[in-house]
Length: 359
Figure: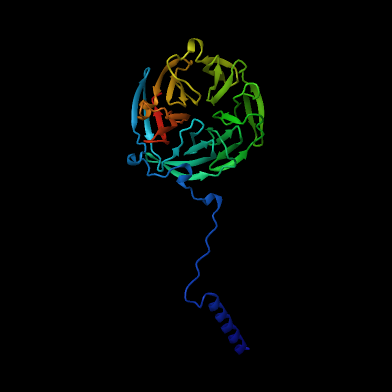
């Protein structure tokens, strides 16, 4: 019996050595599968193929800029990205910024390519890329965040998507009609809006539990030719629209009742340029983020204070018209973060992030 056991062991050993190539080396381990969460983010996906902030390569180098508007001293401070983001010069493209749960998020919307959402951490005075968020849809246009740390992505051709801590928590909770959604900071309700007055609804919508959206009161827009943009702040709803061939901002209370029109009558803004963008509300009034490259300041009653151009805010050449802005968010400390596409030498633009204080 012992002899038989020895023979069997010897045979097994020989078979094992043969399978390993004679025992002269160990086989290479099989590569581990890459999951969606482990997918490496490639900067070139969003056009970053040059050294970060290298002026010799045409890169943008910002700084800290001080301006006065009315009785306020406004400071804009550049927060560099560890890897540059390039964007084509096209008014249909844009970069939006949001802050949630201690992280910053940049959303690149491009008419010709799928949307991209990146998460960043503030390390010292540098925004460091953390990860790319996998999105269920392709073409989002709007990004906003609530005080609960939830991000909302929406767009006419995309399903509503909510994200928290890098994961999708729901997608399209039954939002009917237009798919543009601007959320109230509470995260309990928002405004569903659409450009066409005749075919789209512009109304309050409420989140019900975690499964559906309930339509609420419609906003009065029948005298407008079109709706251009919508922002919802803690105390007000701001709807950009065209009225009598000029841009106005209709201000509603949070119940959907009209308060007044900014840009019309005694609240006219002659001498400044106001185009659709986001509105940020502070204790001192409102700031409109003009997509053509300026910030316009209003007091708490909607009367014009003044305008600061992109060249003064970000140090960009005054001859350029490519300093596009669309997005901003008020932070808990009273400062405001905003994203802007600043011109690079030659062609194209680069995304810059700034923190604004003093209003």
